[in-house]
Length: 375
Ligand SMILES: Nc1ncnc2c1ncn2[C@@H]1O[C@H](COP(=O)(O)OP(=O)(O)OP(=O)(O)O)[C@@H](O)[C@H]1O
Ligand SMILES: [Mg+2]
Image (cartoon, rainbow, N blue to C red; front, side):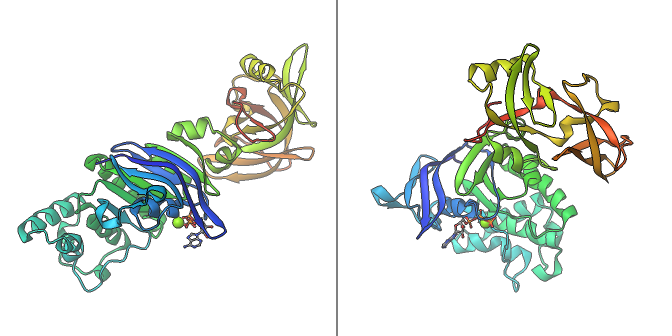
């Protein structure tokens, strides 16, 4: 087991900058998720850690060992990094049994036969594959095949696991199950794991911490709670959470009653501690981006604190999507639109005008220019 450190790492492919000045410290035994949209540089980052790609600039450490630093001419090849990688398109050898597939990396390393047998059986037991050791890959389900691919990585007992969207080929139900199994297995083995996904639910449910990446740039690193509740900027706020956070342009104004976010069509009164922060940082009279998650909007019927004109407004219901467990309600005030995730028992109807309550404790305010969170 080992920590993994990236220090100011860059990767350029000709004109394309795939990874830009990335610094990331993955702790020993940690389950770290790299999360971001397609093309943001997740796979490239993983491949640099594995040694399949050389950084253009910066240093990479696995444990105490410097494995890549182009300025010093250091580049440790993949086979000497003690890292196992599981890809999205895990290619099992079709003509080999499950047993031989799992044993393969050990045979390559000329591990004694008895030792191979012991380790393959141990891994098979752990992954629930014992009954399947004699089968060929084509006689397995998708989830079973995925477990064989994991077994092949685990059997080597590497210091670090790198996984690139390993569950994306599975159907939705199996993915949910494998998510839980994989997390449990990682805790059991205690091996430092870096796991790439563009699925924010996977990231939230599996990771000890999440590194959110956009356009090759690390946006925020934090626990699932931190990135969800305290997004560092508009991108993170919008990328994590479904339905997505609502963003509205607003200006901050102050009168004798307090500090408000003014949307033109309506305004909301900020709480005193929020007001204080904006005053202190000189945001009174300035434009900002206001953010609130759909679940922090309420049908007034189900709200505790409601003060008309302060945290409660009239809005038109455009569309109601009934998900059973909740209702996704598309709301409109003049030309402003936003989405609420209402209580399943909310009876609001399309075309109706209703009272909507904002949970002001849950409001996010971002700088208009930098898009960084003020709170
Ligand atoms: N070998 C290469 N040559 C040129 N450009 C590359 C190469 N590999 C990756 N890129 C570019 O680098 C950027 C990052 O690619 P990368 O594969 O790391 O993205 P990703 O986050 O893994 O995306 P996805 O979620 O689609 O797998 C993209 O713009 C991609 O086109
Ligand atoms: Mg990728």
